[in-house]
Amino acid sequence: MTTKLLRIVDFRGGLPSSAEINRIVPRASLKIETAVDQVTSLIQDVADRGEVALVELTQKFDGFDPSPIRVPQAELDAALASLSAGLRTALETSISRVRQVSVDNLPVTVTTEFSNGGKVHQRWAPVDSVGLYVPGGKAVYPSSVVMNVVPAQVAGVSRLVITTPGQKAFGGRPHPTVLAAAALLGVTEVYNVGGPAAIAALAHGVPSIGLEPVALVTGPGNIYVTAAKRAVRGLVGIDSEAGTTEILVIADAQANPEFVAADLLSQAEHDEAAASVLVTDSQELAEAVQLALVRRLAQTSHSERAKTALIGEQSAIVLVDNLGSAVEFANAYATEHLEIHTADPELVLPRITNAGAIFIGEYSPVSLGDYLAGSNHVLPTGEQAKFGPGLGVHTFLRPQQVINYSRSALSDVASQIDVFAKAEGLAAHGDAATIRFNGGK
Image 1 (spheres, rainbow, N blue to C red):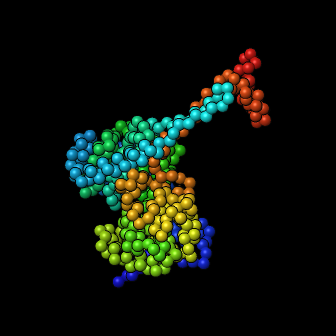
Image 2: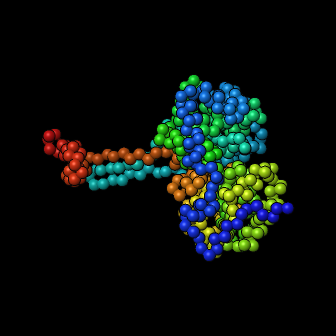
Image 3: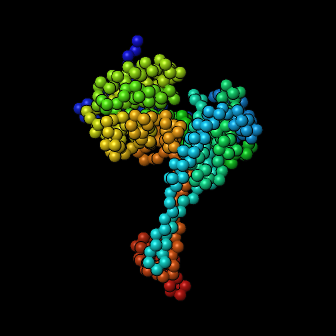
């Protein structure tokens, strides 16, 4: 019987550079740049042929006709009516918690005042329309409906559009729990289309089915969905490149190997390309986690998928000299989900700079964040956490500065504006300020 699943990367004795770390412990083998090349023509096809292209692509890749692509209200209502009481309660709890966190995280407006009546006011304005991608395929994600919709509603977005792929098991229609979650949240514009074609449809619009282009596209997906988001960025805004899931666990000798193994496995079951990484200064813990993984893998319902992820090059146990090196590795790797299982997590937390979301202690598993923590599970992957945030109410808001100066306040700086303008060779800039004080000449 196999006693080890995760390969061992031994960095005891010193860490390599950040670039070398991500070469030795890479993400999935398909690079996003390659995926972008593969989806570019598909996106243009949807832009050119609209509904016809969506139907043909769905038939080609999924094996069914998605028509009607726009989900009728009766189908949404029926899905909500058939939702089990237990799942409805769980969804309502998740909605309530994500809404509370979103409200508490609304940015505040600020006004800065200068002498003589000069004011700069920063306000936050919601985007007009958002396309919310809810993935499907290997799993069903009503939770992603909650994570996308609730912060957008709190931000005040007036038009919410959901795209989600149909399922063969449901006659080519979206999964009823996804539709039920949309109906529960009052979203009525839902389209039966998935993958990069859905991103293309949101960005370019499909007039024949009533789909107008949106201003912003958000939501997680596989590498091809992520590539499509990158390809249309500029035509529309995107939240982040929230691609194939990844987890990194920092753990010391005090960690519970069963908990660590369960959390690594929870992400591996998402996708064969999922990354599950443990970083530890304890070889004994590493060995115990390996044994626990083998045992737990045999019991899980998606064992083949999870095994492929765990034995892939993107997953590993990384041995380091101490927790300082573990933190250095984590910041270089910049994971989507970071768990800290150490004797005193609060000593580790302040040194973490790069992570999509951080889970502290043995009672804060990633699965809590996936559903009911109140945090958002749409997070940056593939080192995007080095510069980008996860989804939240801020994603759907734009800061706008409102400038309001009185005559005397402008007078205080008009001559300096003129100096700046002349230094930059832009005399008309200076004239636009000084004309107000020289009799209009």
